[in-house]
Image (cartoon, rainbow, N blue to C red; front, side, top):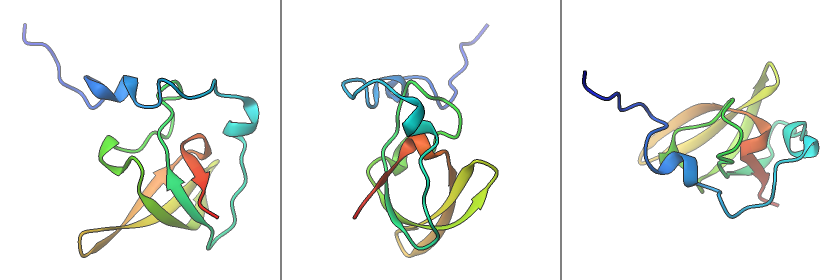
Length: 93
């Protein structure tokens, strides 16, 4: 049987490997609409993880969906909306 190649295979598990351990404060961070954030993937928290291509991108919080945030980023000439857990976001200001 052929091995599966999902989005978690390869380098996704090692992104953020040398960062600090994840605390409860990282998981329940609060952001307001209009806040500028940096997408910083924490590989030890899989829930709400964005695609690895968005690692290190700047974005603006435009809303909230459940406990996650809707972040709008510019990808080329398109504006894209990502649903990201607060553990993977860092304040840019």
